[in-house]
Image 1: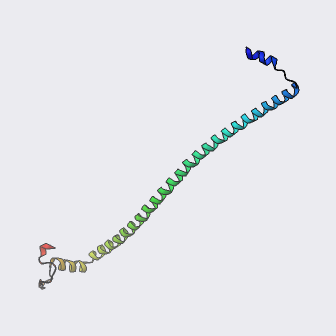
Image 2 (image 1 turned 135 degrees about the vertical axis):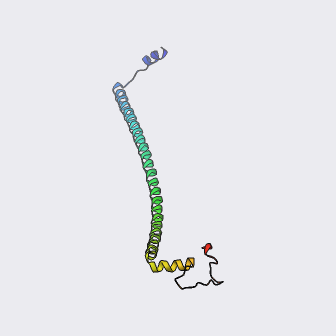
Image 3 (image 1 turned 60 degrees about the vertical axis):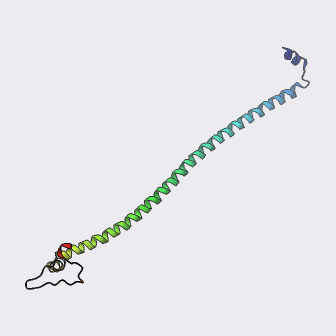
Length: 135
């Protein structure tokens, strides 16, 4: 109540100038509030964009790491495949050789000491196999 009495005692000399300044201050305050509101929206938008960018960045890095691991595994698998193909080729060659009856007879005679009719086999001390059962 005391303030109301004081306000009645204060008289504005130039009412028009005072009203103009008050209106101008109100407009300025509204502009400042609007600017703050826009800045806050921009900060929030930038923050969201930053979070999205970081998430996509991590995803890209993770995909690159996975691609590198898969590339390494692919190279290892290709090397393994190449050696398996070579081994398969050798085994196929061996199968083809074993289908030849002359070669098969030669291997059996050498490994198991079989002999042809009228042939005698002598075992020398320098032979690798001492007996037939060790083979």
